[in-house]
Every structure is written in structure tokens, then in C-alpha cells.
Length: 262
Length: 247
Image 1 (cartoon, each protein chain N blue to C red):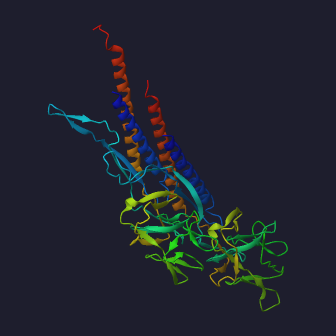
Image 2 (tube, chains in turn orange, green):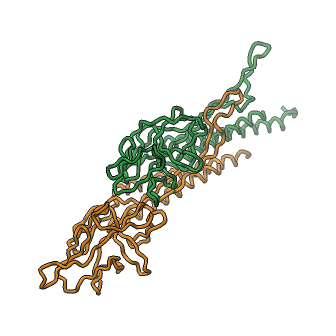
Image 3 (cartoon, chains in turn orange, brown):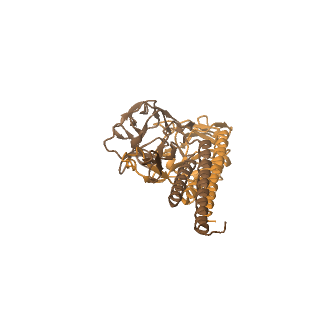
């Protein structure tokens, strides 16, 4: 009976985690470039009470044995890198990646972090920075007197300067790709860091060799679908409830056993 | 009298095991590709011993003679659309083959990912097998068609190894969403299952059925307890009252 108690408890813990993940998705429904996550579960080891093929008292073989499982456990919180919808903003430094790839930014501790949130700004020196002020790795400085900024789909940054008819090329925004993007680690602030399982970043020009192309004056919205998350939330809550009922049942049965002798 | 107490005790223990199996099903109602287990006990089969007077005595001496029905329900679970490229579901009979350190295991849970080398792996990190062994995914666009062919950038690189079995009684649960077989001579048959990319197979646990089963098991457990209490009372009566003559 103790087994059923712990089995049901593992189910409740799993649903709690499921709820945490769904809540984080819902909280980030308006976060630029956010990628939703999903909790994956798997069953635990089985205890074989009676192996298949055991002979019974009359000498015939029991065709299937009895295996009792021990519940469930979370195995992964899978990041889903499906493309989010685009939102037109008109802001020249709002960029989207249409397809695979990440922008590269330098964090204050000198590491390179990766992001899909392309809401870039200019700082006082004219450098392209994230909303947190982290400098883009490509180190593009926009001159103070530039009139218009154009960023092409292959990442080339061009500005028009007063008195010049030809636009001036300032540099190229390169993108990074990973063999296993789902293995990246979330560090908050819309940023990802590589891990052993994501593999090393592959750097390339947007729009070539499988890299996504860059779209200007738009943002990638969160890929969270509210209806889907709501349904998941209902399922998680009901599954939580039914596991608590299993605990109640196991508890009642223990009570019955304790009352065997009055 | 004592015999009856042991029969009822065996009944209580059996009902307890049923609740444990039901609870495990309920705990895995959100586990992708999980297949529910079913355990039930039939009536105790007694043996009839002929008597000299021509009748027969029904004996329940052997409490091993219980009809046990245990099995895994391999019916199809529902499908959930995820749009994740490496989420695969099987529509029909069959299993994905996974390379475990102790041999090949089988799973219906297709929430796969790539590892750092680009190999297609399970959430536990074990390689998913194709016809030519582990599958390397190097390229931008991965497609898996209905027959399980893995197409990377429009080139077919391998076909997922999807196997079916004549007799599923040979397949036991290995935990961690896997099935394995204790029989090394088992023949793997090619499966006709349709592979669906961007979908996952949900657990096939029927929560209403499991709830009903849990209530039934608990009430049966209670009935056995009453039986034991009754036998206890009768025995007590016999011990205390027999021999006293104050009628």
C-alpha cells in the first residue's frame, strides 16, 4: 500500500512541475522571441511480482506475469523552437529571424549569449545593443548623423549619411546555429547559453546554408498559444486531482487494514 | 476456520496489488506513449473431492489457484499536435527501436531530440535506430514521411526502424517509457504503422475506468476485512462460549 501512496505522489509532483512550465509559458505570452517549453514525463522502473512463464499449482504456465510500476518522473523540459508570428513595428532596429538561427550578444561578463529577441536599440555611442544594453557581437556602430538604417535580409547594415547619395555599408550581422537548439540553456533575459548537449555554435551569413534570413522593422512574437496552454492547464489540474484521489484511496485502505482487529 | 482467514488475507493482498497497478496508470496519465496495465483476479478455483456417500466436498485448500489476468493494453492512444519537428507518433501497431546499453528496447513515446553530434536520441539520450543504425541529422530541414523515411534537405538518409511483434505477451515493460523482451529469439516483424511528424501519442490510460476500478478494489478490500473480523468474532465466540452450560 505504501507503494501506491508514493506512486500517486510522484504523479502529483509531476503535474505540479507541468503546471509550473505552463504558467511560465503563459507569463511569457507577450515576450518577444520567447520559445515555449513542454514538460515530458516517463514511467519509472517496474517491480516484477510474478515473472511471466511461472508455473501455477496445476502445472500450467502463466502466460503473462505481474509487473507493478512505481509512478512517473519528469524527464525533460523540451524547448519548442517553432517560429513565432511576426509583428510589424516600423522601428528600424527591430529584427526578426525568419528561420533557423540566433543573434549573438556579449554579456557583461564577456561571454557570448544567443537570442531570438530582435528588439535592438542604439546606445549613446551608437552601438547596437539589446534592451538590457548588451552589445551585439558584430560590433556595429551607427554614426550619429545617419539618416536612415537599412538592414538587408542577408544581415548587411547600411546607413544613409547626409550629403552622400550612396548608402554606406557598416558591417554584417551574423547568426549562430546549433546542432541541437533544444539543448541550449535558458539564462533569462531572453538569452540562451550553449551547453555540452547543444553543441558548438555554427556562425554564418543570414539566408545562406540553412540560416534564416533577417527581416527589418518587425519582431518575432512569443510562440506560446494561449488556447493550447489553457487546455494543458486543465489536463494538468485534473491529473493532479485524480492522483490525490489515489492517495486518499490508499490511505483509506491502510485505515481498513488497521481496523482488522477491533 | 483459520483457512478462511488466510483466504481473505490473500484477497486483501490481491486487491492491494490492483490498487498499486491502477495508481501507476493514473500517475502516468500524462506520459507520452504510455500503455496502461490491467490486473484482475478471478474466483478461487476449488477442487472437488468425491466422498464415499456419493457427494463431493468443495475444497479451497489451494489459494494458489487464483485466475490472474494481467496484461498491458497496447491500444492506440490519442494524438496531440505539437508541430515540433522531432516529435514523432506511430499510428498503428509498432514500436520505435532504441539502442540501450543492454540491447535494443522499444518505445511508443516519440518525443525525440538531437544530441550535440546531431544524432536522433530519446529524452534519455539513447540513440533511435534506423535500418542502418543510429540516425545522424546534419542539415537544416528534417522531414519524416509516413513510412518513417528520414529526409534531410530533400535527401533520404535512412528509414526509422519500426518493428511489430506477433505475440505482444513476449514484450514486458522496461520502465522509462520502454518495452523490452525477455525472449532473445523473438522475431521482429516490419510494422505497417503510419509515422506522423509533429505529433505525439498520448497515454492510453482511461481515467474514468481506472477510477471505477480503484473504487471497486477498495470496496472489495473492505469486504475482505469485514470477513476477517467476522471470522475473528466467530472464533472468539467458540473459544469463550463453548463448554459453558448456562443456556
